Length: 601
Image 1 (cartoon, rainbow, N blue to C red):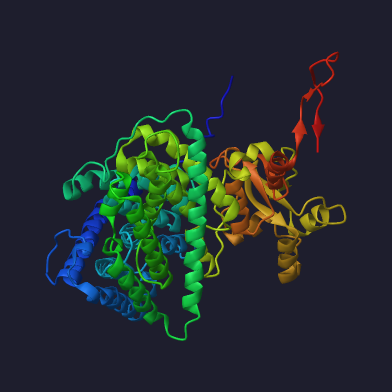
Image 2: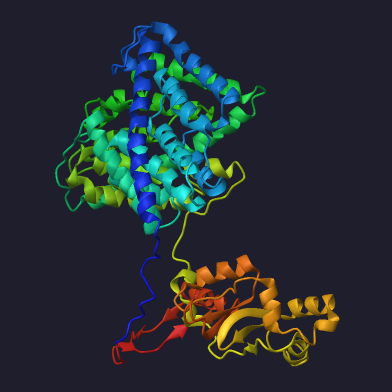
């Protein structure tokens, strides 16, 4: 048995080690950026609510401002509105959509302003009571760092995307201590491909950030939890929890963008919107102080069922209104932490209603299911929930409920909370992707092996009359000199050269013409993918390309055309749309049970 040594599972990339090294450095820098961001949040929290210059981690719920607390988020929103208007509008929003937009439509270029203003604005907003998490801003900030470093070295747009995503995923790792979930977030939301050239540098950046996080923030899960192993009857309750979490995700997304539309109708500049949103946050914070800020302590209490049902319901209702209005106003803040809190709150309610299993299981399950359905990233949500708690007993319920929620949201929602933001800016993102049929097939599988060639010593006049007359069979032919491909000739080139110098057409050979053009011939190799050759045809504006055995010898072995490259797509169409049945079950007992019939339609 023989194997094709030129065919590989993955494309080779000699630049991968260098890109991976850069990604590792970016991972370390993103960890420092996360430390700076969290420090800024602590600083502004102490400044706004306690009037002290301190980096101590204090909850805004412990403030003693009384009714004046309602004006604190207004001040934060006003400052951020001014920063967005006169600094950079890119700091508005929750970070991940902006990163996606830069990747897909901006060649992964981000400005230095974003790297500075995004953490500063987020620190002000969250520090003044904004009901957001730090993960969206650090994803945007880490991505900006990766993009800026990539812009200082000689890399392609694809490599710059890898470094941007490496910074974003490393930032998330640093905040939550969930490196595997951060890698999955990159795969499900940011990379839009599954290749070693991008996956390995991003994973390395997350690993570096995970180790570096231990030195800055300490080791261990953010919300340690251990639930009892689920019983067999838990499957039904997981389905119920998943459906309700999917409904919650759809409702939150619809409410958010309806609120954003309402802000868009206001007869004032968007610079003032965050201050108006801050007023709603302040009023909510007056009645429910624990709804202010990031609320990691509240998430922990919900997961451990430390809050009474009535208290949890009131807190979560206020948090949902504050988050929807504040984010709809266009201020700066993340979505992960609020979604975790709202999902966990749903789980607290269900823990009093769903039979069987450990009641503490349902806040964790609903938290992950709501997050996965809202983001459209179920694998990220499952692993993220495990990384936050290290509760291995919950993995199976997490899998079941999160996938049910994701399926519900996929059917009900046209777009996720991330892509809807981008769609409103005029860009559509198709989230599904698979292996391109042109990537799965190689040139030697589709090329024509019986090739008609032209000798390089033939004159232009003879070539035009012999090969491009009435009996012309092809639009272009390979030109050979001593059996070696030196180029391709077509009718348009010949007619143009003959019109330029009609007296020399009878004496000028194809060899002389091709030497005068001084262009390296474009050719394909048998082991190259159809996608690579299709790109080469488009770059050179060709319809046919000779296939040679080796770049050095250039002995022709076939020819590939645009029509040849359609063949893999036709096969893929049959796989997707052609319905087949190979066996038919006989209902009459006297007949054979199976008959080897085949129906196609």
